Amino acid sequence: MKTLITLLTALVLSTSAMADKPFKVLGDNKVYYSAFNSSFIDPKIASENNIVRGADRGLINIAVVPNDKESGGITALVKGTVTNIIQQSQKLDFFEVREGDVVYYLASFKFDHEDSLTFKIEVKADPNKPSETLTFRKTFYEDGK
Image (cartoon, rainbow, N blue to C red):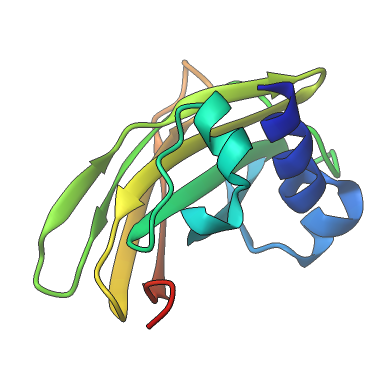
């Protein structure tokens, strides 16, 4: 697990990388997000962490960072769905990853070649406040096509 965390932390949650990553301000937090083909994850690391790789598999990464910080992450309740253009929907089953002060959430999903997917992610960082919603769209391409 530590190898996966180190890899994803380096790619997504380092201070310099975060400045270049898309995020949305939701209340008191910045919610950083990325979605990519699971084939970007090394096969050994994927196997060690029960991540299914495949030409038609993707991975979404969510990190919730307080507005007054540049990196790290906080614990939050993260759930969501991914929907294609013909309204077929998949539930995203997020799991939490921790390394020191870094906290982020990963979920896998399936897609078809040239699939334009809409992600709707609900984030509840404060149990005393309502959930906030992040929505974004991305087109995915199967490896090798």
